[in-house]
Amino acid sequence: MNGDLKTNKDKADAKVVAAQKAYDETVAKLQAAKNKLAEAQQKLQDILDAEYAQSIITSGPTETKKTDKQEPVKTPEVTSETKTDDISTAPKKIRLTHNAFVYNKYGKLIRKGLHIKWIKRDKLVKVLKNAKIVKINGKRYYQIGRNKFVKVANFEITTHAVHFKARLKGNKKVRAYNRAGKFNKHYARPNHTYTFNEKAKINGKTCYKIAGTNNWIPAKKLALKK
Image 1 (cartoon, rainbow, N blue to C red):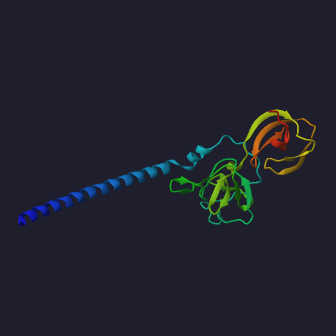
Image 2: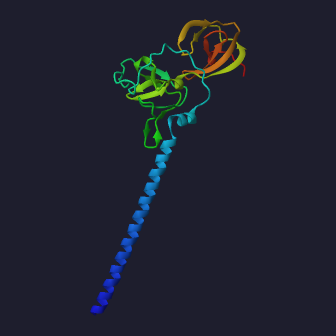
Image 3: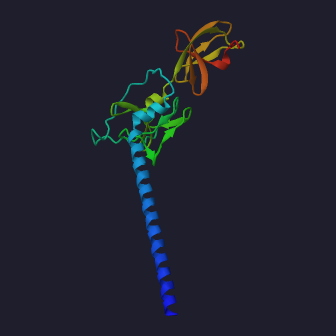
């Protein structure tokens, strides 16, 4: 009787030892998998630098526009006197013409884990400091939040060359706009044929530029041939 009990106990002990060994092996495999994942994540972060990431979403060449006089701001790497993360009370809203990554005050991409923070094109973005240009590592940025910056190039208008003639719809004069989408105190008159040489999206609307001027006319105001 005692022999049977001892035999059963030995068998039970052997099963416990085997189960513990299997558990330890499983834990070791899981840890190895975690280590490999962490290593892969680190490698991915290393290759997703700012220039590589920017090339992923660039949507074509941009024609740079003339901007207001630049007022370069020294970054914290150069001087501790200039704080680029101060919030202005006079923001402007500007529409993005390209998808835009968001950078910190050191010119590094802002990430949440493996995900890079970015803003979709055509979104109206609040730009701080009255849209003053900030220079970080020689590149131009707008500040859009506390320690958040977007490259100026993402707000610039992309134009396409065209060549056609057209008249206005109706019999009323039409306001002309500048490249920034502001009324420039000029008008296009009815019953006159204009030559257009550029096309662009301004504030989300298709516009055409009258050749030899900075007068942009909304496409919906033109009698275009279909």
